Image (tube, rainbow, N blue to C red; front, side):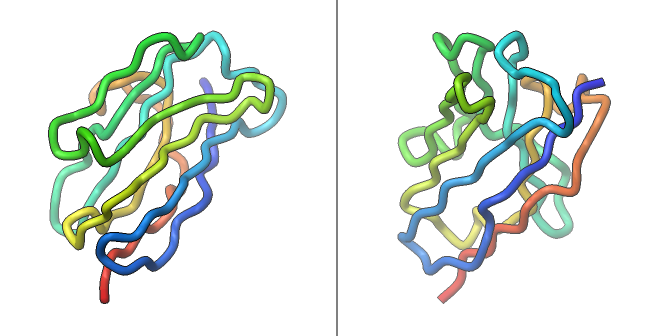
Length: 119
């Protein structure tokens, strides 16, 4: 069971940017895992945001964030990132990273990191 910890959230104005980071708990190395970012807004179901292959040579963005969010990874630093630009109030949510691309297949959720987009 891969356990991950998220960081980098905060309060940002509409149109602003944030970069989230995802790192393993303990001594796991991430380069063999597909890692996804997910989010859950108040009153809504958790949804996928983006995911990236273990080597970083393929990724998938879900429709609402295409062109604004970029997932990347630095396997030398054992970290996966989510660069979020042109943030909108509707991006406000708790953001999670986990193994895989789909909510239904994730078997461990960390605490997440809160992102609030507000003026």
